[in-house]
Image 1 (cartoon, rainbow, N blue to C red):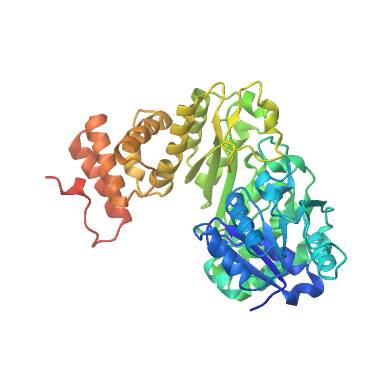
Image 2 (cartoon, helix red, strand yellow):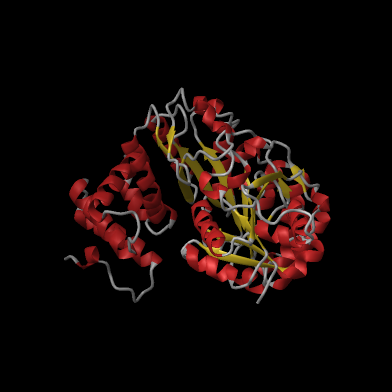
Length: 489
């Protein structure tokens, strides 16, 4: 079906819809009935996406460009310009807002909108369709979008379809910006926090709940920054707890007041998830990257959240920060394991475009991949081989520890040992055996762990078998076939 304006992006997974595209659609004004949102996922070939877009004979295509999709969007845009050069391509998003446009996109994009383009995109489309701007440019013209007043933005939430609300996460935001200036993060570029008006926001949440939305992911960088915001939002959902909502928030761990903990205690299991950015427990490293965090307060708060509430805690650490040794990272990892969060995500440092982390490049010999997602390859303290080991450590930890399927087994693995160094040894051994970090079945995970415990660590085979069976039987159905390790007599 023909459509003049297509709003599109490539999402990492189907479950993650684009909130940004919905803001653009909501604020198109009179052009809304000439526009459509078309989302794709990373596994779809670029040429197939180009075909799907061109089948709707658009005049303008607006792309949301992010670190996870810039390579694919470059391919899509190249195909589009080769097939239909008269179509106007407009790019926006963090990957084209800082540090200039990649050379590969210079000949494909007609316009680049930098910054928060909620309103600027609609204004540009109107000018293009009315002939007040040239539709094609010999090279991309960059337009810096003025920072919009949040009260002037129309709500995007009506543009989640009923199918979206049923099958995907519902991304929402009550604020924009972050008051902190951590140098690895793009939020360091804007330390002003702007809040949406609370009453209209909660009215939109009511509409979403009425339509069937249950899984809410708040994209606010610091949800617990102001009691004037977090308290009414949590109380709103608590009053509707019979609907069984799931709420994900990013929180600052050393700034959680007693009132928030007491309110969180009232939420049942499965409703609250806090994403806690630790990033490093090394004070010198934290100071170096302008990260202000009270580690003692952080530990105290996480312990209380873990023992006094039913919140699911997801904690982040970053490997490869300038000046942090492997020994320091290991110490911080073990410290975090001791606090008991259900999930620990080990991220590899990325050189985000525009982030101030690059000021350390020379002193610490920071070498990053030139390709997205621009991860650290080595520095003066961690060589390439070590970084590669850490990159394999992360997905293996996800499959063993974060799944919650190996609780007793990992306790046995870590008994009287450092969790980090022990699991790093297992990760190296597992990669040598399996040859990859993916395609590792549940049975395979049990069998490999049995082999490692009994042959490498020389733990009593009967104890290992009994421990792994306890985990297996408590996490799987009664009719599931036993893994090979359990069939050994």
